[in-house]
Image (cartoon, rainbow, N blue to C red; front, side):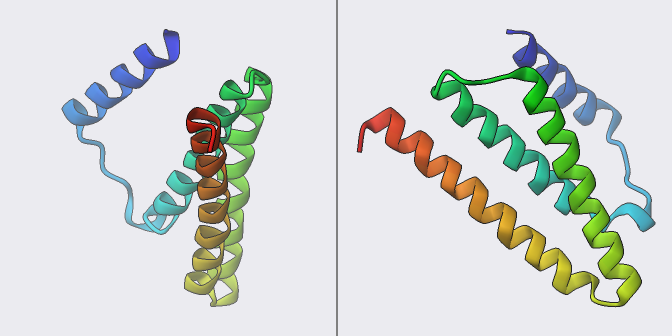
Length: 110
């Protein structure tokens, strides 16, 4: 129940405060969102399999975001930022869809 309350508070705060992202950080936002979504969908799968661990979730969430941001930063420094960003999105997207498929199979037994 606490995560749901936290999510609701975060959504309301985002709508009310309407934060802006500084221009130099804007390339990292989509990557951070995809990396965080990967951790959340993985956590949903772990909950369904009754093996969820909050510490693993927090470490996965933070490390996914930091590693993805570091890869995009490195790509920007090397001059291949968009290609590396695309690679990160593809890899994390595959993981998200694989976890979603596992959740679907578990729910519908198919």
